[in-house]
Length: 261
Image (cartoon, rainbow, N blue to C red):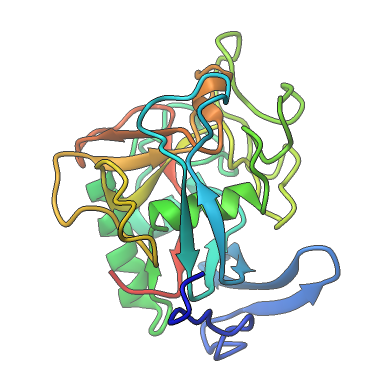
């Protein structure tokens, strides 16, 4: 780590916050905090600052050239939702449910990046200090990997008991229905692809401290792969991008907070 870079505190500055409906700490996964809106609860996990190797090594099976391996430093911790946004949360905020595969505990899908931004703006207007946002691409991969450098947070391979993926799958599944990673985050691989804050572009390996991607572009980043994808496209390093108005039945998002965009 460069000598002039200092990591932030391992604890959030204000804990708990006034918007929190409940909070605590468990031995295995650490700090958590939740908000409840119109009876719908969303839990977040606290992710400590740190550094990691983002991207994939050249010998990783299934890698793409756009996954250049490089060190990234995140100097501040952040909160990230333990699950993708559910249909029941989307519906109580937006008043409708665009998803193809209906189920209140399934991830909302068929939502564009721009529609997710509208959702965030509404939520932030309803609950002062909530400061919801989408995770940056670097934050997303850091939270997915949990210190691993293998293709998946579960190791070198995955099974259908761990990840909802593969051409023989037909739809999404409820959030929290598959094993979480070692930071308590569910379905980071598969189920739905997740929008990130960043515009898509080649990695800027000269700007590795709290990277936020290009300042402009034609597509926003998607991470994690979806229920219809093969193993190659649900790896920790896999990255894709689409127009901010794009929507599909394998595309959703995960809430984050702790920084403003």
